[in-house]
Each structure stands twice: as C-alpha cells, then as structure tokens.
Length: 266
Length: 223
Image 1: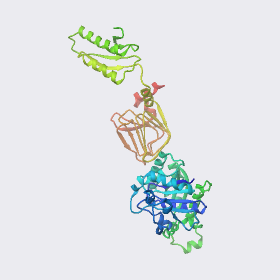
Image 2: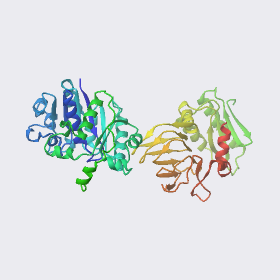
Image 3: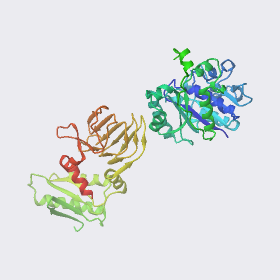
C-alpha cells in the first residue's frame, strides 16, 4: 500500500510544483513506483514541468465525475520504465469541482499500485488545500528563506497539525542562496527549522539549472551532477528512511584564474 | 411550620429551608410564612429583603422560578438571592478551571488563537500571528512572538509577568500596546499592568505588592 504525501506551502511561488516533480523523479530513480497528482485545478502546470503536457486526454475531474477510469487518465512518463505516472489536473474548471471525499477516494484507488502518491497542492488554504490535505497521510511543507514564506508555512503547519495526520509534517527549505545565507541576509536553516518547530526533510539550493531544465520539460533531478538535483535526490533518500547529511552551505572559493577571467560573472 | 424558618443574621434576614423535607411542602410552608409575616405588619413601607438558604439542596432553574413567583405575590418582600451550600460538578469544574493556574506548553502558530480561563503559565512557543488569550493573569517563561492578552475581555486587574520583547502586541483588558521591537524594556521579571489612569504600564515583579495589592492578597491567600 502506497503512502500519500501532500506537497504544500501556503504561499505561492515557493516551488511546490517543482519540488513535487523533482522529489517524484528522484523517488522513481530509486526504483519506487510514484504517482504525481496535480490538484491545482484550473492552473495546472505539473504536466508542463514534467514535459507531459501534450499527452493529457482525461484529467482528475473527469475521473471524479465518472467520465473516465483512473487508468485512462494516468499518464506514464516514458523516461522511467514503469515508475512515474501523472494524474493531471483539469484546466477549464475551478477548485470547487472536487470535494475532499472524491480526492480521498481517488488516492485510495491509487494506493495498491504505487509506493508513493505525491499530491501537488495549490497555493492558499481554501478549498484546493482542503481537498489536497484530505487525501494525504503526511505532508511536505515547502518554504523559502523569506519571512513571508516562513510565516505562511507556519500557518499551514498549524492547519496540518490540527488534522492529526498519520505522519507529522516535514519541512523543505527551497531556493537557498548560499551567499545570502552565509552573509546573514536571510534566515538560516537552523533558524527556520527552529522557528517552525517541524522536522527538516531537506534543503534545496537556488540553481539556474532548475528553471532551465523545467523550461525544457525535464525535472532537474534527472541530472546527476547538478547541485539542486543532489538536494532532491537526498530528500528522496530521506523519505525512504535513510539518514543523509545536509549538503554544505560553504561556497567554493574561485581560484586565481577564475577570478581573473570571470570577473563580472555574478 | 418546622421546615421553613425566618432567621435574623448579621448580614440581614434569611429564610432557611430544611434540605431533608419535601420541596412541595417546603414551598407551601414558605408561602404560608410570608403570608403570616405580611399579616403581622401590614403597614410596612420598605420591602423586607431576605436570602433564601436551601442548605444541602440545589434548586433547579424551574424550582427557582417557582420561588420567585411566590415572592412576587407579596409586595412587602424582596428576594435578594438563593444560597445553597452545594454546587453541581459542572459548576465546580468551571470554578476550578477559572481559579487554577494552567500550564500551557503548546506551539501556537500563525493564525491560531488559544483561549483559556484563569491564570496561565506559558512555557510553549507563541509564533508571530498567533494569539494567547486568557481571562486571568499570564506568567510567561516561553518564547513569545505573537499577541498576548490577559484579563480578557475587561478585567483591568490582570497582570502579565515575563519577557515580551519579541511579542507583537500586549493586551490587558481593553488596553492595547504595540510593542516596539527596538525598545528593550522587557526582562524576565517585567510586570505589565494597567495603572490607575487606565493605561498600560510596566514595572518589576518586586513592585507587585504595592501596585496590585488586591491581586497580591489573593495570591497570598491561596497559599
């Protein structure tokens, strides 16, 4: 039986969808069967990040309303043998098209066939959030080291704790700019974790490759050399129960020649 | 007429009702007693005030209604209250809730509001955007970044003791202070209270004895 985990944040634009796609990809690379469920009805984009946008025929609302069977709506990611599937969101309706009961039912239907079901939650704490949380055994709360995102994450953790889920919520701090954190311009990892008093699942460095790869429809986690990719892969391993140390925040000092020839790089 | 008797006490008149006797009989005798007293002194102008003491009997709302209706028949009497030596378990629990010191060790997050009755010792963590509110006093040892409210909704006697330097707002009763994060006037022994001009003021716990004599007396009485 699969575990369902909602990826949520409260605030928009902190990287819920990117994190869902990449954690899903990383789990699939570790040979787990993963289903990603896009619950951002009306503003779907998980399919685009995965490069599967052109293959949608049926969506989750079709499944909920009985217009399609779940197997017809599931899209298989051909880059992975049989490990990664996507259940896309509907585009031309809104969050009220689904009820928490319907989401729970769909997730329960997926459980026997998958190890992990990741639910991509829309921003906000309204109907879409309630739908997503209803189907989840646990939660990953995504935040960035900005006070606005941390404050919303705090609110969301509060709402999640009230629901008393099977697995306590865990935190991912996304888009960490090493130099800003080292200079003390943003809250540091310990500060954020202590402030939110939840367990830290992982940190992800800010990396241009994330956007570059997303734009090509390829999750960055596919690239074994990239820094952000390593972060996502570590998160996936921690989800499987391994204890993996956090990646260092230390910046590599540029060598003399680098400084000489890349003077204006930043 | 042995079940109901009029007694004069230091505080005023009291009509005592035997708790062991049947209530219907008692009420009948009560009415007879009032009629008898009225006939003895028909020219009395000021109504005679009395308290009905029911001993180990607790009257229900309906029964209290019956008593007030009986008294209303007589213009010369005025019921000041019904006193009983016993109380319901629910009322006792509510009183305990109100009078006890509650230890609160939760994490109160943004958007959450915790409402308590009575005095609260806070050893948890109050995040920005969260609210901790109680009807009594607040003693703070934990981490406070949100809104603290003592003496809710309008008990100006309440005090807050503890470090509020990171809190966003302090409210006591209906007075509000927006805390300036740059002003470091709070320590662990800061006493916040409402002064005689009904303004929020700060001092040290050592001055609790002189500033809030009544509160201090109550605390000492508990010991």
